[in-house]
Length: 149
Image 1 (cartoon, rainbow, N blue to C red):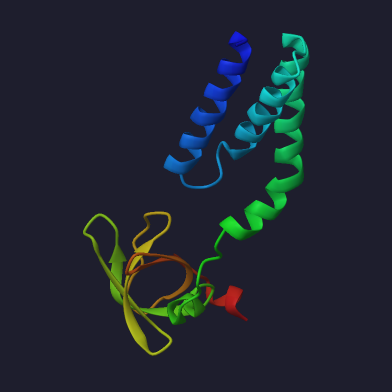
Image 2: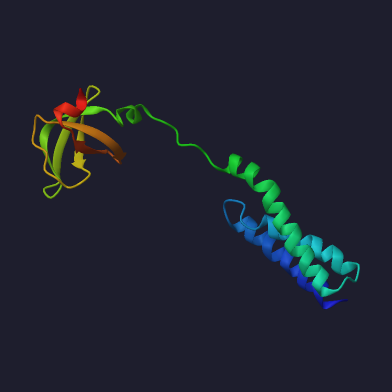
């Protein structure tokens, strides 16, 4: 049996096993290319034709299927009730000081632990803009009263 037949058969197995061991459609396209190259090798085509078949079929498989696979593989983040505070204005109830790991804000009827995004100290009573949530902490920026009008 031709050496290239064994090489392409090995490539199909390796790419197939790699696909089974990984999450996220990593090498299935190369397995398809190797399978096509194996078919061409069984027809006794020159090695250059086999390699070109592998490259073209792999590229075509990626090009044609990747957008559809991506749509099914990507799972959108599930918004929670907490997400509605992002972009909202909160009132500082305990001075926000990143160095002392302290700070709390009141927003949407709840008190949250808070940290400033730029490391600045924000005194109690100030209004802040909620930028994002990291774990159970809100990352906030101090806002000027004029900016809220």
